[in-house]
Length: 386
Image (cartoon, rainbow, N blue to C red; front, side, top):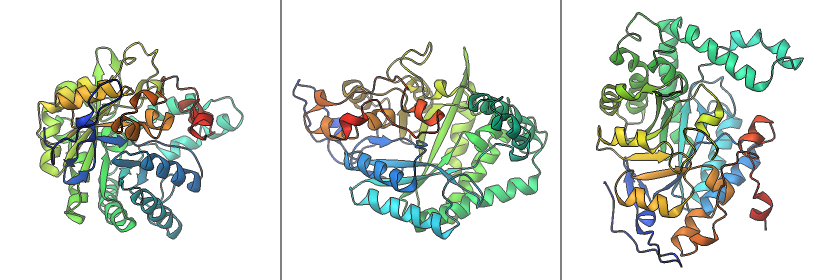
């Protein structure tokens, strides 16, 4: 396990030692003060509310915040790095996070949604004959034809966008970037969606080409910037996820991504299914347990010496410490746990782990709030405001 410096002893009042959680690490060249990362999360709030929530999470002691869905093209969803207003937003955000002694990472995102296809569903959505969940499913069905039929000229324009966006992200103050390996990269990687017969389809090597060229585009423009890769894994026993990489294909994809310039891997379940699969509640039939996606990390760990970050239902400091201490993962990414209690890292590392407001993985106000277009919240929110 690649670490930087000696572990600092941190012991809870119950006697549990959290020295590994508290220890620094070089995460692909980015020095993290501890092992806790806030994973990319669509908060669905106003710009000022978003900045304040991320600043508050940074103040709680995590080492890095990954800002989700930073568009690689000028016309994407949310704030744009290509506009004055968008650049000002990201600069304000990075400055707020940096003031709390926390690094910040831009997740470079390219949607695989076919906007033209979406137009035919707008009347049904406006008349409420189609729900938001049904729209998501319908758009996922459009991904395959969209990716398979995309002209090479457009592919090259998108790939150039990854490099352009990385340059702008650095100007905005981001410390590193994460290439979103689900969405467009994941759809090109997947046989479920990618039925191309040219150099971007067919074999594993060809289906990895888009993702690898996206990474190379970033590395060529900002060679000194670490590149994290959100590695989306889909499984078939039982079937979960439609984009991303099959478990048995990891042995091809991981070395190719590493050769392209990836410096660390953020490993999770592939998307394009029910949101309750990638954000699983405690009642989920397959992913209800603590650290539910860590078995995917085990497979990636066997294929690379680069740092590996695990995610998925992580709420218990004792469990997290054990996974880090054994070297199963180098870092862990939390989202709902830090929304439930931003001070999770600080409380863990100062001997107050028993005071953490533990996420119960109910999904009521977080995923539920997002789906209701009310923003991501938590059932503990009133307590957090005290």
